[in-house]
Length: 67
Image (cartoon, rainbow, N blue to C red; front, side):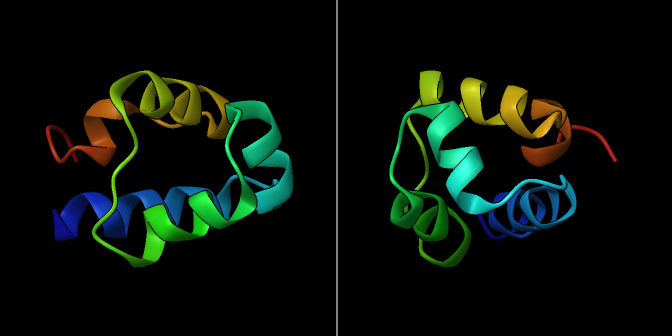
């Protein structure tokens, strides 16, 4: 889970969008985006898919399936 959290946080920070913009696109609160990056809370599968699309990131990369 540490790899997922680390990579998700990096992708969110480097996507060029604010957490508010990301949250609006994904359909969750700003606080939830923060929790995904700082706690052991992970998004549901459908939310994860929308999040990857919103930040233009590879789900395989975030999940540690590819480098």
